[in-house]
Length: 51
Image (cartoon, rainbow, N blue to C red; front, side, top):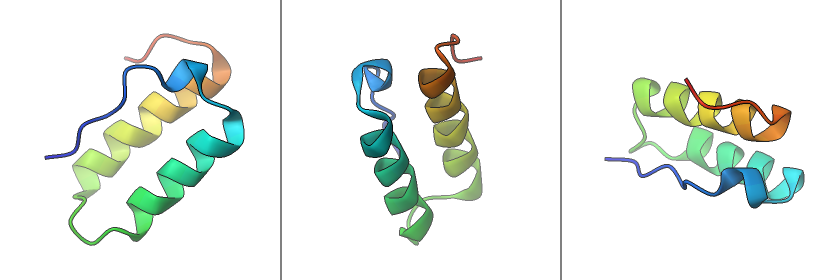
């Protein structure tokens, strides 16, 4: 089970992108988990609340 950091909005954008890239390369991360992480990363980068 993937745990999405709750403080992504405080991370540098390059760190958020690197984290997401690492997840995309991890065979243990499911498509659903990756989609959730991508939504959280997008919300953090755009300053919007995660859905």
